[in-house]
Length: 164
Image (cartoon, rainbow, N blue to C red; front, side, top):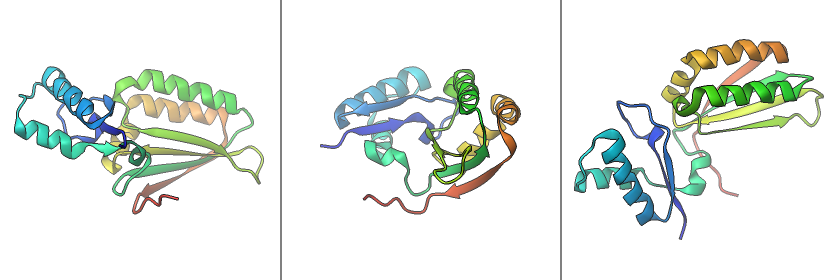
């Protein structure tokens, strides 16, 4: 049986919440109900449980799914450790306010000191909230200190996910 996961960032809410729960389906549902009641003020009942059950995803589908959004950032740096330090600082400062799900930094095999960072979000609106956050604005300024030239950005809407 596939592990299930529920991510609060993918469920509309008046409160910013970054809780993600994973495990067996029944476990996740019970923990999600408890969280929705205690943290978000919902009332336990069939409607809440149906809504939460609809938000459950197979854990491996969390990498990307149709409708999610990827931001691809290409940059040049001689000091990747410096870049890693400001990313960690950004993560600590953003804490639960981040809407990013995951990120990958890869070195271009054929071009020295060239890197690509891919960051995944539940959707475009989540990415824009993340980008407009003051901590992200500060990160962008600090990134210029450890990179060479301008970074290029590509905004990508996930259309299909191919399982190989």
